[in-house]
Amino acid sequence: SEIIQVSNAFPNPFNDFTRIDIDLEESSNTLLEIIDTQGKTVYSESYQLIQGKNELILTKDKFSLPGAYFVQLKTSNFTIRQKLIAF
Image (tube, rainbow, N blue to C red; front, side, top):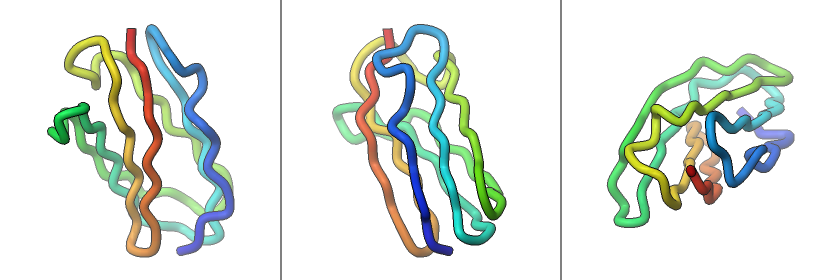
């Protein structure tokens, strides 16, 4: 699958939730990981994303503590990583 566009997480920093919009050329199994600054995965979930627009909502409970994290999206053809700040 080929990615067309991934938005920056918004809001960021966030308190209750943040959202990432992903636009895909074709459907794709995608692994989402939330990684702390020590490199430990604190949350992981697989999604079957559809062709076209997808919206991922990340709620505060998926983050172990307030602080800086990386959110990583992986498919068979791409990996995207963004930095997030959770309050």
